[in-house]
Amino acid sequence: MTSPGCPASEHGTAPVPLSGPRFATEPATLYREMRRDHGAVAPVVLDGDIPAWLVLGYRELHQVTGDPALFSRDSDLWNQWENIPADWPLLPMIGHKQPSILYTVGERHRQRAAMISHALEAVDPFELKAHAEQFADELIDGFCGKGECDIVADYAMLLPVRVLARIYGFSDAQGPGLVSAMNDMIDGRERALAGQQHLARSMVELLAAKHTAPGEDVASYMLQDPSGFTDEEVAQDLMVMMAAGHQPTADWIGNSLRLMLTDDRFAASLFGGRHSVAEAMNEVLWEDTPTQNVAGRWATRDTRLGDRHIRSGDLLLLGLAAANADPQVRTDASVLTGGNSAHFSFGHGEHRCPFPAQEVAEVIARTAIEVVLDRLPDIDLATTAAALTRRPSPWLRGLTDLPVRFTPTPAL
Image 1 (cartoon, rainbow, N blue to C red):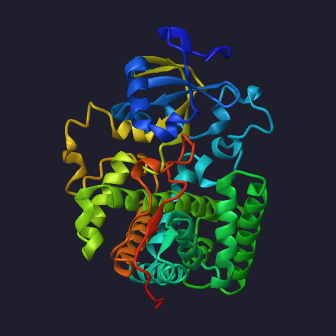
Image 2: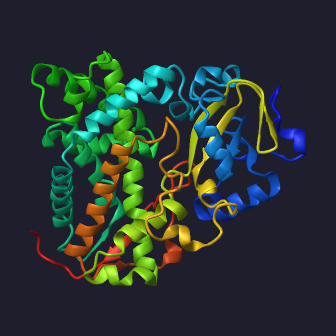
Image 3: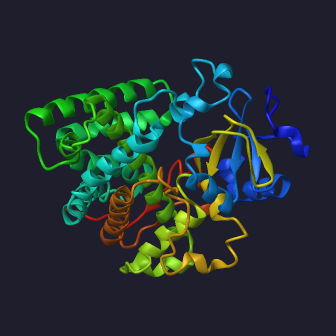
């Protein structure tokens, strides 16, 4: 952190680049080293040598996410905007003057969060599970006769969007296009912009249709909210919900199946049982959470956090994975048992993932895993655990592929 006004050098420690292969290959070790060398709050640099703080400590993260007056979600506060080029690759993630729930604060944010929560709460959980089962069966029908597949590319990365599209109010015919758009955006390659444009255009068209013929779906419920949100605001929030609901849920499915296929503790579930599916999913949220780091919060005034001097306008990144592994709270493995959900994988505070959204994600992920185990009872890893690779990202942790084999079975 060498930018003017940056506090990186106060402890004589060089900032850590928030990039590189270790975030994919050995993040737990990397976070331990960062905690050892820098403490609970570590100086980091983003693309372009832009300074920020990564909050590694569980208690410190609880403090930051629980005090929106001191650590705001208002990105306008950032003291680095003058150093950010127009083509900075992290702009879509950091956000600036975006009309979505991610960057509203105060009462307006609470109203938007309530709108989203009420709309998702109206989704019938039994219908949601039935939707997930239907799409899961359709996807498995496409490869069950081959005896092998990539369970990430052929299944996990295709399922969440289809379910979300249906409950949001899209027709099933629009589902495949939305899947392609979302996965193009995730790839971050030349088709990312086209994917984003397709998603935005689809949301505008969806809302126009629901004004004319509202239905029992999330988009219609949001339009009916009495708080008076514009179509642009609703469309932006639907896009955020689609993105936040797709990739982390797909990675939750993939990471959980990887654990069950590589850890003998879950062998029973792979042979006709389901009792360990919830345990595997919960362990992933603690140990291998899909959302590793999140941007961000901005200090509204000079303060101290974890023995660090945080200046007004400094960006703080939420180290969810590091906080989950904080030895100050992880005294033994008991946190993984009994459904302990004190992890930070869904965030904390008023900007955390809404509880109804968590429930939707859990139903989709658990159903996806259970249907695989029912349909392909002898599923097994088609490579070694050591050969599995992750996307090289410090933000979202997921497998690039998960090759499996099984006895070919007929489609339903």
